[in-house]
Image 1 (cartoon, rainbow, N blue to C red):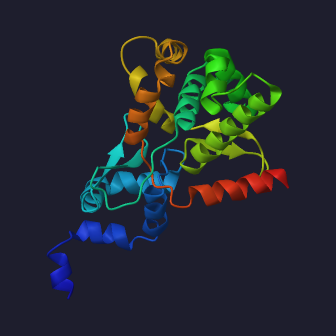
Image 2 (cartoon, rainbow, N blue to C red):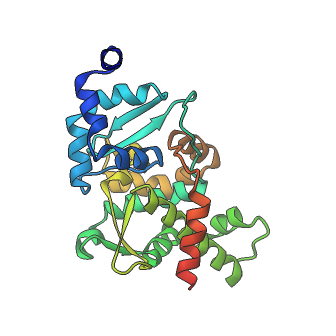
Image 3 (cartoon, rainbow, N blue to C red):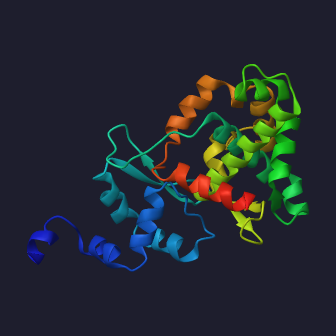
Length: 243
């Protein structure tokens, strides 16, 4: 039996799978989580076994990707055997705003800590508020209720992004403060080269490129992640915050 298994997997891959870190890490990757340098043990494990795990995940029609910034994630192919779902347009837009904030001087001034309100305010500062409200409700009149719904959507997007490792909450359990991981560059591929990255990201948002439904839909497919339990988890978190 052992000889038969060794015919299909290398000794080093067998060591990786047998490592106690692997089960939890595998579950996180399949759930769409990004593993950055902040996750010391998991990141070191992926660095040690990167080639072997790339081969392992290829069997499921997904790619283990190491981004230029150093973080890891799984990118599914069209024929993936791992369940996935595309990010919403709001999640994509909030991700781009987070990327802008990550590149901003404010990140150093605030010791890297931001709040939900910071993201909401920056979103309104960078994008057309009326278009955002219309995206949430085509019949929007700009009322306080419409703005409250927009703020709720932004909060929901941030909770989803926290679950996949883009932001990490700080403080108490229901805190709305967080730090932004370098994994946020999943949303910043457009600004990795060429012009000043912050100016490029600002241009994408203000010119409407970051909010074009067609572009966001295309990028959302590229950022497709497993979210089999996402709605249930989000509802639980929302209930905890309201409690």
